[in-house]
Length: 222
Image (cartoon, rainbow, N blue to C red):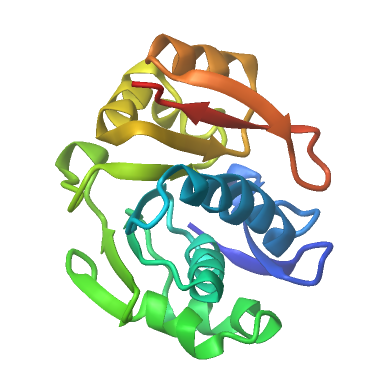
């Protein structure tokens, strides 16, 4: 399936898939959206819930690796330990990764490449405090090294990947979370919020990134 690298409004790249009429990141700003939804509303929030712990993150849809890079940067600034597990059945090719401008814009080019370089299905130590495991397996076959503290749900929209936005799927994610763990996503559609609620989450709508009024933070209370 054809993938086209293009600029979003903040000057950072996103990837368009013409056949699906969708993009990997917001056209209003890839870095801006990912920082707001995942690095701040997700990682920034959960580190206050689980202080002085290694934070375990699960990302549904590794994609360009931008969410992982922003998390790495945020963790390094605060000297926090992170283990990052990412599911991605259709990883980018090396030539696509090298064209993306996130590393240049965020002054982290070597780190960006190092997040992509490790082979899938093996844990890799990117730095002393940041490890990553990428997998092409489905959620049913993923075995995190510990209970998850934060889930980045960054799958394509429900119109494209409906199976990743159902009650059944959210029940699986709920089961992987530690008590007080959270899930964050850019999608706040009522059908998605109901599926989350039915799966056991306490769902809250919070302000979204530029170009989107709302996003969701869902919490596992017990």
